[in-house]
Length: 306
Image (cartoon, rainbow, N blue to C red):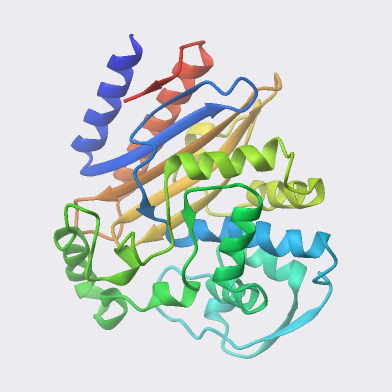
């Protein structure tokens, strides 16, 4: 199958699943790529926890933060389905910076992430990305802002209404009345920007090696593995990733390291047209599309952007 046919088929599969998206797969040694709409920005939800971890660990490497410092954390007291870790705690806890990094990145704990944002605010994370010459990721707000959407104001059996609003209220220019879904106000980034970040972590030059190694380990320990992991995990490969989910948005970015030494960064950013919380079929389609692009590139195809 030709490259254009692979990309066209990928788009059709997403459309049949009620999704639109931006995908990019890159060979981290040759730089060869395949994907479509890789420069279209999306609100990134919990994907922002990856640049947050990088910024905190770069400060640790410079001696500005001690990873063993204990931090008193107020419990999240969140009872709605989804959030994990300290977000669901009912009582105060004392956690070190290093362990907050694990909770924030590997189990996507929003309260842990905001404790790290208290130490390194969004503007400081954005400045760290600029210093590292990683463009295309805007860090503007804390994770707690993601829990202030219409979904949190509705009863569980009405959450589909929040998804309908999220789907129907977007403007052609990617504006949105829900701030967390407006690319001009939200934490936002493109598939290419996150692949660039992963590339810098797996083949570090500007990023400190200690920082890169720690973040790679945190992504390898990711506990949320229902999305792309089923298509990229095997005895001959290791999948390291971070997911991001908010209302109708479903994302995942990661790297598959093959036993033969080849590594591929994968970014899958999607928005659903289906007003439903649980969409396992859509997530399976995301994985299939990402794996198909990866397999075509691994087979030796030339770069292509559809």
